[in-house]
Length: 636
Image 1 (tube, rainbow, N blue to C red):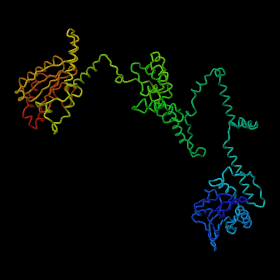
Image 2: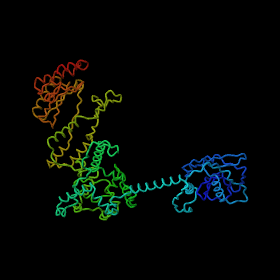
Image 3: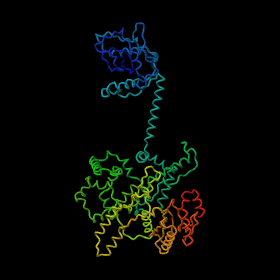
Image 4: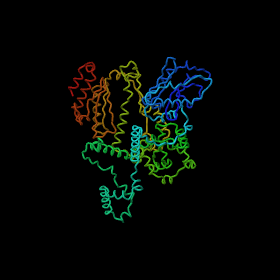
């Protein structure tokens, strides 16, 4: 084991020591291999553990700055442990005397025979190095003497040594270095304002005033002062003037084309780009509105909030239960607002359909600062609404992107408007109803080639059952509603009866099984037209002509499009047979649709054409022929 001792001339010594001796300082390291009190160590049998010697750190990390020193162990002929310290000492005799004095700190123990010999320490050379800090660095580290037990020594100035020229040169270099460091520190901490106000002498001030730059400044000041009117200055609104004064950062960058400004390696082009980027960043930061909700949530220091506020927020979140947005961020944002005033201001802004956020009311229920609302049982009146500060609500919305207070969309207000529809709205509503009547999306879900296709899905089957329209009430429900209407109608009031009939009525039809119709039926001819008399007369003429030509083979149906007008050009005829074919279209003819050459008006000649086409399309030739489509195109 090794210890560190400190001599009177501040040199450091390393030497093995017996464990029973009283030590001046703790060992350099402690390990499990150190012998206990009961162990007897003979000098001839003791050897240092090489692994422990390898672990000794005498580098800079251990604060043992011993230049050009090598520490090692060696065994002599008698296997006696030695420590070799190469220090380049020029005066071996003087150092050996010092070490002898150092070894006197060990108190002899009659029970131990361990002997420490100065012959075990060998010096080579005598370098000049300051070693007082070495022992101090160790002793103040872990394992050393406590800081409270260490007695500070007085600072002793460096003494001259005329006999040692190397020492004198080093002392002079050290003093010059200290002076330069003091000057650099004073320059770094130099306070110009403090120097001018408190430390500048009259001679310095006079010399400063004589400099060219100060003369130029004084001239500019005098020029500006000559332009100022004392009365104007006396009545000046300084806040307004400062608000209208532009910052020097807003001035354009003056690019003089320099490539290496003041030796920094920076060019005017680079600094101009930096100036533009900085101005753009400042402009974006100053833009309104921007998302202050998430910004405040991200930068909120929760340690600044009181325990009461946090408890109130927890209670509020529990009261909310759950929502589609992060209420915590909004609760933090609302800390800067009066929520009760926000609610009243929202009602003031739009009394019919105010926008009230989900997280507002729970705050009135849980926060102590809204105890006044609970005391009055939330019974606010219109006077409270009129006295609400709507500016705070504008500021609230501005914080997350609204330059003005928004209103609910009409569909979200729940308010039913009773205004009369204009012509376009009436047409659109009528068209929607017509599409609802003639088109059932459930039909598209039936696939005739699907193995799951049932007999009741086939329109030609006796067991066919039409699918329920998703947008229409069930037939049984409609009949029940109509019966209720009829029960409530006053038989003596014609107006009520007419209104009930308009709202809904049921037509009863008699079903007749026509065997001949079922055997002869080949197609369904549909005529869609406006409710105008001219169109209805043409539809009737077509119906009679088809009935006389085909009899029960073709069933003719006239569908009156109630919302269609004359300018809509609606007169369409199509056949639903083995295929669905459009035979006449006034809409396409009037709109000059490509690949459509039929006439717009349906006169006698066009009616005869329709008879010819229907006869061909319901024939077996069209049913089984692969050429009828080509022939059909040629006729058009």
